[in-house]
Image (tube, rainbow, N blue to C red; front, top):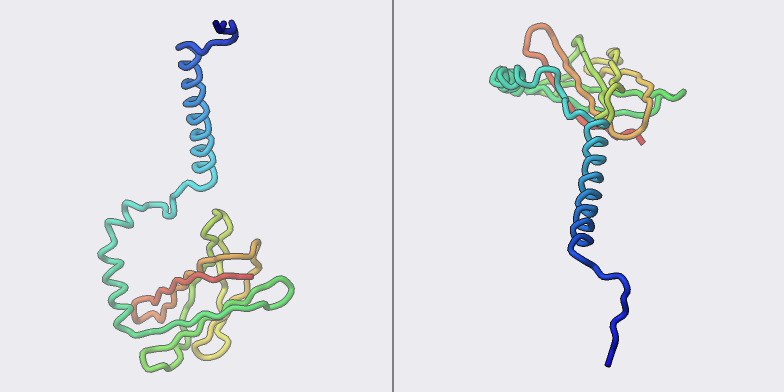
Length: 165
């Protein structure tokens, strides 16, 4: 006949506390993930998103008017030396003629980090070719937003992503 050893026996209370501990670890890890997700990026990309949504029909009308002008933009960039980057925007009308004498406003935004936006000061190098120099705090992806205005037509808006190696 075999005798049973009088060792440890798993009872109902052990299973209960084991399941409780497992769910406790899962909940704790989820709370850590939520904390880091909210702490690193708030998710807010605009100051007044509700008002922007209400005015979206006007945005669409302005884009249709802009598209009707037939203006085209081309972006190039490269090193300007001494840690500077030079961004060049070339603008032309529907016939391909350069657009000269425009007032350009632009910003370079870091899509993954807040507080790194770079305002750009544009200079017209040649007819239709505008250039701005910028010192970037980090390499990588940047979003370029440019608005060109001639004072007579709807402003030309251009957005593109640049990757600085």
